[in-house]
Length: 121
Image 1 (cartoon, rainbow, N blue to C red):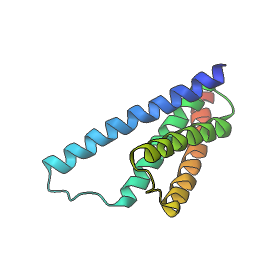
Image 2 (tube, helix red, strand yellow):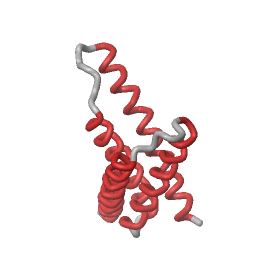
Image 3 (cartoon, one colour):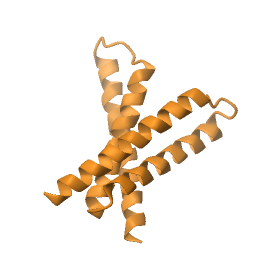
Image 4 (cartoon, one colour):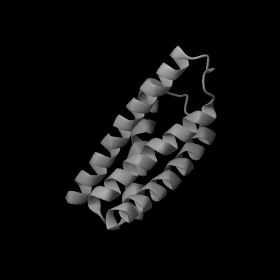
């Protein structure tokens, strides 16, 4: 049961970090002459958000970093797919979905491993 709460907290931490990152980037675009970001920044921000959430979950759990990271990434991707299917039905692009899933899984694994490594110090 504790593992479930760690994954849930990791996903919520990732969502909170995504909102914070969105506000910061939005302010940067609005207040500076920086042009709007390309889709590559979307992949980077998704990876960073999942990395942070997975690291947080693995840090709280203190073990099984790879598994915790994968679980956070899978839950996060599932939530993104559900939201995408609700608000944009019929517009799912498989190439982008596969790329985002691979990036998310890699970021989750890395975040989970680093979260446990930081905890063990």
